[in-house]
Image (cartoon, rainbow, N blue to C red; front, side, top):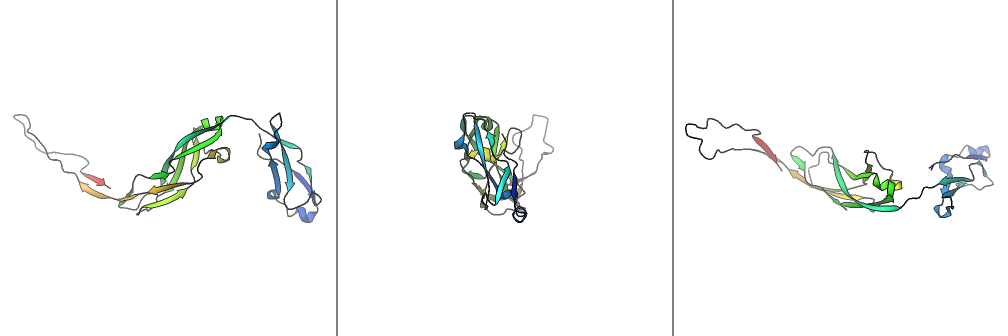
Length: 198
């Protein structure tokens, strides 16, 4: 429960005017967990001694933990593209390496995960390429999962992007066989009459 705390510090004005929230360090050391699943939060001010900056409110706070079994599950990396290849080209079947990622976290968190997606920008691509990216975890509602609560077996994924040249060719339909007696073929119509191949 809680991923932030409020503190009040007291110091000379020359020091107080320089302080930012980035100078306040709050550490909850899980090795100090109590029998009630609470962890004390140690607060300090980076770069200053207790004599220079006193914490007048915010000490003796605790973080309450809810412990669950840790589980791991493998997810296939889904590659999703943005943009379009250059005119006359098309993106072939992309391959991710690794193509499977193991996610480890609480049983509740892992059970809510739907997929792991790597977004790849292919705008104006005309040659084969390889790119690296950070995969994003999505839950069953399509929301991004906080990656700090789930450990990934790989923090980066490399994707191979084959780019194929395209050509538009005409489709030719040749009738075969003979119509029933008393009938003859007048015209043959079909759609589409062109197809693009890569």
